[in-house]
Length: 374
Image 1: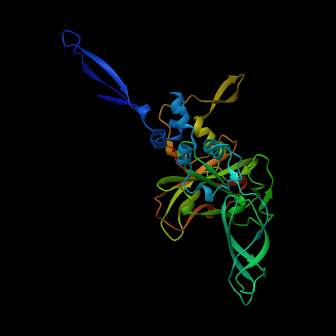
Image 2: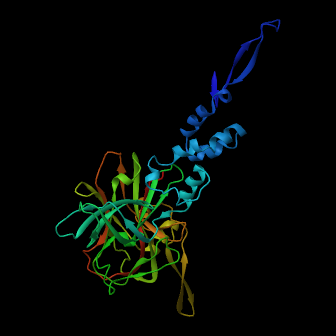
């Protein structure tokens, strides 16, 4: 007996056939199930499978597009990350694909904070705040706020929140993805205009990006609360950047990338930020000179050699930048598996501090943390 989408096929004895013949009977029990039961079954598949099931029948289409199914494809805590009013979507399916295709940013503006815990009631200088705003819960310190209650534990204060990260979903699985903006990163000498400058860029999802002018000590570090990630998921951290026409200092120079929990074990790898070398490795372009002898002088031409016979070194390709669909470059800095039980800050760092050579010409948008594909 074979079961396929509820259709059960089997051999049935035909007592009226005269010779005790058998005929095949098909009984479909799937569509007699309650709609809620079918929805439970569909929700155990994947977003891709749910979209495919819409093509099977009108009954499956109705169920596969229901909010009941797509609610389960969204992260369980998505309401703590996404404000219901931040995305005007008509259904949970629309919300899912909106978060996949259009990363959600924290809105920049001034907010009024209430019920903030006073850290030092005597000096009245530092106040801890935590409240839900846009992307999620914002935590930080207010300096020199005014006590607005006699119990000295309630204050009101105006302050500005900058856009520091984006939130999106991985379309295949619905797992959470984040990008830390350059403003959210710790960049050595990042506040010194001689070495770095902050410029707006239309193709960036954030208000501004960090452009490297020239440094000999190159170091960028980003942190994210590990509990913000989807459990039981292998994540990769990727530096998202561009190279200017005058980029220099990174040719054939490896930089060190590390990832791990603060205070715990970290993994390290060497990567390259030379975009041109990464392109040559990816497309197997090898410069070759062809000489033509013309009247006692050789004229040389540079061409593209045919692909080498040996297989590509996948690790070498992986350690060089690749182009993204949005026009930026990215380099994978490392992997981290979140099992849902770890706590603390995940720290991602990329640096080159030993060579001493000056380098410049990078434009950094941020560090993206997303589920590893494949």
